[in-house]
Image (cartoon, helix red, strand yellow):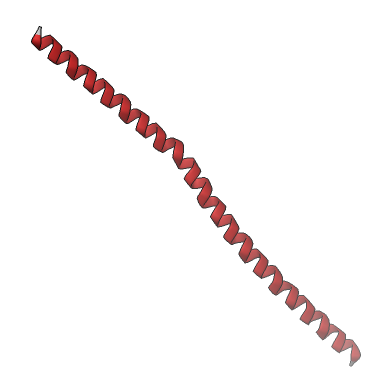
Length: 75
């Protein structure tokens, strides 16, 4: 009978340990998800900057072409 009580106590201890591990895993997953979101934000920054640069270049070229065209018309 005492052997069964020891086994029961060990099972209870293992269950508590498993609950603790599950909670820690949940928190770790939340931290991982937060870090993944931050990495995605950081990865998108160069793309946004590149789009701004391309837009500025296109605007500058268009402005230059329009100025040249107006200059040719006026001369």
